[in-house]
Image (cartoon, rainbow, N blue to C red; front, side, top):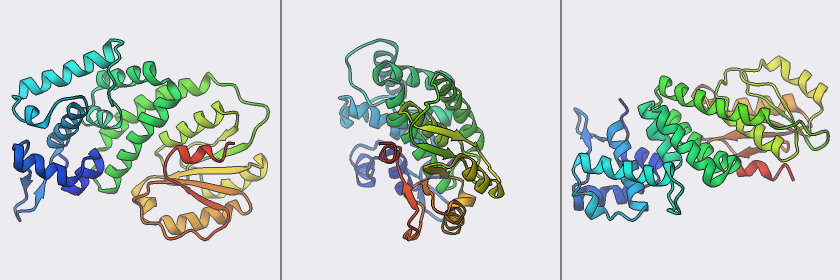
Length: 295
């Protein structure tokens, strides 16, 4: 059972803490729980509720009306919204994305994941599903890790579903004969592969030559791989808290290993990283940042 402060709820839902407090005070929309020392917090069910309230609000439901719905009526409204936007081809514009995947992760609901994914593929296509839905979701999972609220079983469940989709898409692409060379790997101790897989797809789809080493690569193997491939760019992700807690020293070590190669490091912006002064290092905070290096 998660325990979230109002600031963490703001980070995960995108709803300002001030707005949440107004919902509580003016509409009695929800009531935070309290610890034995009287500190306010929210649990998983309240996080899901806030995410669904946001979904209804963005699609024309007034907060004053939402606050008067019974629990069954509230669930019916959410269900109807999903049926209209995901199961049928309608022109209703709805933001079913990262927040909704979070509720699917908390509930370990494969059916809901597939509805969101398939609906997004129909509306946006695969690439925009990756950049506009999946990657923002993973950024929110990164926040879960940073605030130590990840249930590993939930995260592995979603990771396997997403990984299957991306691997199929990558296999459909041919390796270009020309184009910039990108060497992709995760450093020793890093096992969160989804971001790297998505980068693999986007780079390959845009004509770059990708050399993929995968996760948990021994440090001693990196210089040899660079010598063999001679890449234009080296790309890695730092996600695991055990690594982000020592991000500055890890980045310095990786930069030394890459020597004169451009090192691109994807890392959550909430991680406290000192000002990077190494000329060959660039930090990426969103997938769109990567596109500048493909052109």
